[in-house]
Length: 169
Image 1 (cartoon, rainbow, N blue to C red):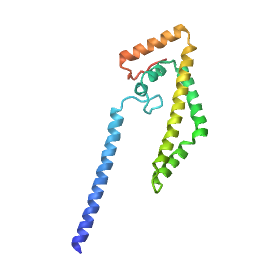
Image 2 (cartoon, rainbow, N blue to C red; image 1 turned 90 degrees about the vertical axis):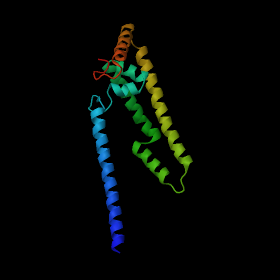
Image 3 (cartoon, rainbow, N blue to C red; image 1 turned 30 degrees about the vertical axis):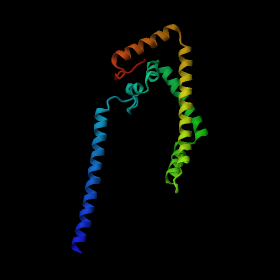
Image 4 (cartoon, one colour; image 1 turned 180 degrees about the vertical axis):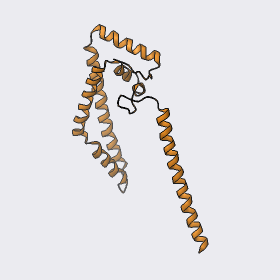
């Protein structure tokens, strides 16, 4: 009986050790990610020029726009997000649907596929509107404003698209 208790305690300590180790590695990852992650957006979170660089050329063009234009695009995109909630549900409702689909017995891959299709549709709608708004904004610019936009993009390219100073005014 003593041998069984020793094994049981030993297994508990082994599990505790691995849980502790995993927690320490996670904390180390967070700290290193924060230290090495580089830039922060205007509100302290991630999302400076690095975020725009990940979006590719479209993100760089948006980032090169004057601040007022970026804000107007952001406001329009937030309005779309609010409108999408009526069509696609709130994020919490979407997560609840995913939880329900993932925990269903028996598992139904088609249900999960439908949820993914709804998500893709909402993302596509957002991307299409964002592109349309960007084209509308650039079309409304004067030649001088477009020249300034081009110059901002050239400067960003020379800096490697990831400078802390960002683009625009």
